[in-house]
Image (cartoon, rainbow over all chains, first blue to last red):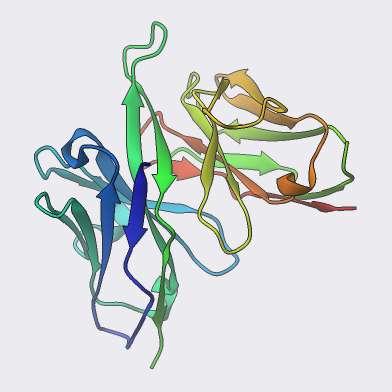
Length: 127
Length: 107
């Protein structure tokens, strides 16, 4: 079955970097982009960006520009998200999700949605 | 950025109730709207895509609709498994944005 399995939780000091992995299985990795979404404790969901797995192109939320890098290893079907210069505000659960894209109806642009999601990786930033 | 506003933020309901959650976009997003369910401590799962399309494997008591700026998610005959949080998300423009969530708990 289609599955995304993420790396384990991490504790980082302010100013450090964290790299979260997301290993895909059950489908052709390069056929679907991977999105990253985070959720601070008790808060909502925040889209961080996406990685096109067929060519490595990325699209980052402006909030994270210059501080985030999304990469991949097609040989192991693994996507990575690195976030630098961490502060306590970055304490959150980080999710990867497969981006599904499909043309429906008469819309010019294809519909898109996230499914499935990885189990999440808790990143705690504390001194 | 497109702002997504859900209402209510929380609600209490009983098993068997019919529940409707609304989501309003700050601009026209046509039907580029998805709904997710998130149980405590778990990852979100997709319920509805493109405003009204039921994801495979999702029970038919879930339905969605709307277009433009106003959307809804309805759960007919609420089941114990449905007590969770629900999020809408727009797929119309970047950055993708989510509603703040609606928590459904047991009355």
